[in-house]
Image 1 (cartoon, rainbow, N blue to C red):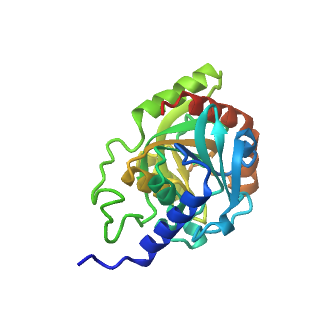
Image 2 (image 1 turned 90 degrees about the horizontal axis):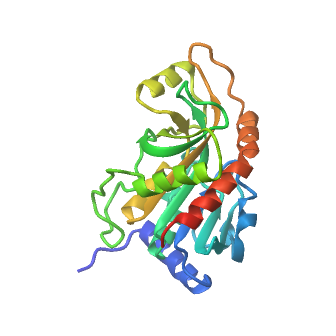
Length: 280
């Protein structure tokens, strides 16, 4: 006797079936946009634009700087799905809900996930405006989207995370930055915290001592679900500020957004170059 489907599984399957009938083609690459990348969608040769509210069971973003659209189209000859806006644990969603779009798109056959975001610098050698390529991460959310019964058809009970980020994609990102003559692109370790309160000086010092180079409040639930679903993952952070816990400066959200937006042209150029180099 088959076990009864849970509500989450039923919602995912309903969304998958809906998009399978709606989308003109199934994407190979997912690019989920975060803070400061609202205009990147203009780079896409769009075939379909769906508001999150029109997709069954998709969450709705409550963050002003995150639009809510699924855009399907072509970029550098690759079939891409652009998620214009993401969701966050601090908005009140579970990590399963945060990663819902990635779960759905992975089941539709997407093979690669690219996750750009904005983060605060912890490494004193970093500078505001740098771009950090994720080499590894620390999940300090206190919740894992794979907790609970495993659905074997979606992925293994204990997925391997050695490494969490595809070495080939890391190399592609660094080579793309060099080709595009984009300076201050480094690789490092990203730590995800729950938020929405920003880090205290003591927390900043502790996170740095834990080995993290940059800190943010997003992306890791999506990474975990993507890896569980067999996808290759690339993470990128625009370093919006760097704080010294011994000479701490106020962290102003508007300044973070301003820095991310100022880096948008370079990050857009880098994303386009990376996409074109990915082998499908």
